[in-house]
Length: 87
Image 1 (cartoon, rainbow, N blue to C red):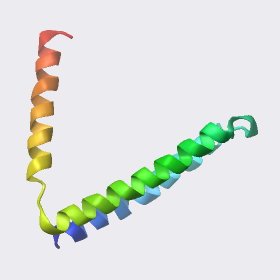
Image 2 (cartoon, rainbow, N blue to C red; image 1 turned 90 degrees about the vertical axis):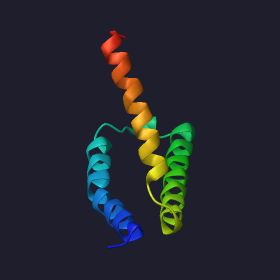
Image 3 (cartoon, one colour; image 1 turned 60 degrees about the vertical axis):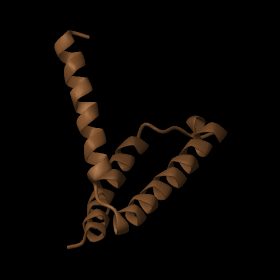
C-alpha cells in the first residue's frame, strides 16, 4: 500500500465516526440555533476540511511524514516539560 493509499484509507475509515458524532450532536440543535453565523461556520469547516485533506493527499504523493514526525516530537517534548514543571 502506498502512502497516498494509506492516507486515503485512513480518511475513509474516519468518515463513519465523524458522521456518527454529527448525528449525535444533531439532537442538541434547535431551530433557533441555526442562524447565519452557524451556517458560515459549517460551510467554512467543510471547505477547510476538504482543502486540508486534499493538500495532505497531494503532499504525500511526493513527500513523507518526516516533517510531521519532527513537529510532533518537538511538541511532545514541550508538553512533557510543561507537565513535569507543574504548569
